[in-house]
Image (cartoon, rainbow, N blue to C red):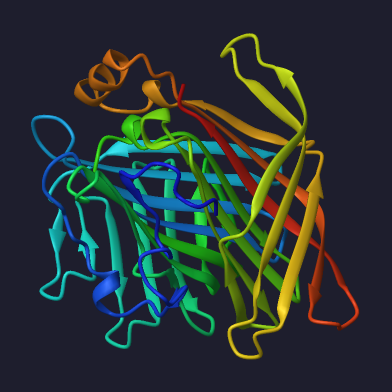
Length: 354
């Protein structure tokens, strides 16, 4: 994570002496923040059969009235299906940690260790699974990066369960698959309009038998110094070993996508650099990938409600999300121990706003 170069940016982890903080029960509450706020809970799942699935619930106050949406993807066994739709009758539990709509339910148990999720979308998609936290969750510092000299312009907040055990089922396009495997959970909140936050986003979710890696990076707009804010984690043998902010995403080779005008990576290098939470040993992770399987290229403006679309278009933004799912190899070095070389499944995203 680069040091803030703009006085109006206050980066998570630089506002406190503690880089790592536990995810508490309160962190898992839906805030439904006022103003131009968007809040999501997203589950990314890699199954034992090698398939990939993600499920997201979104609540947005951008526009004249709240928007509630689900999105879901299943990839594997010849199926590459993405479903998205608006929902109604959004309700929170009394503790604000569980949410229901007319077609979706996300319930957190009293111990705050396991989610039970169900989603029904006509006869095309039925998903039901349990997502149980492995070890612990984390946030960087207090979790928030603030914008504005007095922190009043807006903020971005992320809380992570870097690894979870998943069990469940999905019925999609008339076929049944089990969802037994592992995954990553992210609770995110953007307290300002998305196109004012960042020009680029990068995201990594990697799982092997021994290692789990996550990374989320955004580059602020020029108004806030074009600062790269990066948050990552390393899980070894079901234990959160470290979190890190001195990470990097480098596009080693790119090619022009003539449809969008963006230069899309053909080869990417991801690196993590940090200190172990308990031993304070330095750790470094290297993961280099030439993505072969482009799962999707999403024209975001085609997938959002009309009012939000007009607001974004007015700022001359044309957001696209590129998603890949491939086998990859990571090298993990902790202290002076021999390197750990692992091969696993990598879901990665590159998002271009303008």
